[in-house]
Length: 349
Ligand SMILES: NC(=O)c1ccc[n+]([C@@H]2O[C@H](COP(=O)([O-])OP(=O)(O)OC[C@H]3O[C@@H](n4cnc5c(N)ncnc54)[C@H](OP(=O)(O)O)[C@@H]3O)[C@@H](O)[C@H]2O)c1
Ligand SMILES: [Zn+2]
Ligand SMILES: [Zn+2]
Image (cartoon, rainbow, N blue to C red; front, side):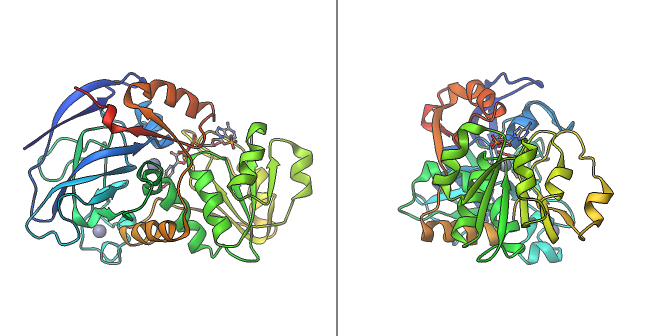
């Protein structure tokens, strides 16, 4: 077994303490990576605080991972020691169902294995995430990173990037589309950059007045303070597509009112309480309400390559691992510009 250690919470509180644990020895298809950077996703916060009710402690979060390959199993072809590699939200899946075969492991019929807080399939216990020294993952769930990439600012693509790329692509957002991105946080700011690069007319819907200037810089054509009813009125029945990234409870019916006839809203944010939907808002104008969860290995690599080619990366605030509490507090106050990334060289035993 391989020694590792990281920062863990032991109960539903943002109180991180060092934890020593083991990674499995490499199977033929495994890659061992020394972690250099790990993004802080709001899902980490929901999970730490047990806001979805399914956290098992101790928990080492982190699923936006970039690092250097230390060693590889005997059958690994994609990587050799010294390469830079990324790991996202998944580290395994059944490999046999039609979705796994199509590279859409996020829809695996038997459920994928998450990078943290899932059952570890080979040595038992739980999976531990990227707020740690190293990680072992199958080659299939390990991604190539462009050699000249800004590594810290690329890490957030592994979750925030792919989670926004997949629905924008699936719903054919591009030239001639009026798209709303709701919530300008980690996911939202990637959604803006991607939708802008696809040629869409991008409207940011924010609850933070102080983000208007940034929204325009990131690629928005318009910004809407959507808690203001007058502003909503100007845009009613006009959007082809809305991506809802909001992490806290909010009124989705207001957003449904903004959709054009036949328009779609795709929910990616996961507040801890259920949405309440007014059927009247849905049926008038044949509105579509849908969801989207991360992306499979095929589209994750495709997105990474697309971003490298088009110079798309995350706007980040790089922090040492000792600043987790501050980063969590600020993220919860919608005060992250626009993703915290942990510099893992700050991890000391
Ligand atoms: N579907 C998936 O596969 C997937 C993947 C990753 C994350 N997620 C989920 O997506 C959500 C967003 O994640 P994130 O990392 O982007 O979080 P984040 O960086 O905290 O951004 C969330 C944004 O939502 C807005 N917001 C927060 N509270 C609000 C409120 N009370 N009313 C209105 N707007 C509010 C804020 O934007 P403004 O300041 O602009 O209003 C905030 O910046 C989380 O729930 C996360 O768990 C889902
Ligand atoms: Zn995430
Ligand atoms: Zn499967």
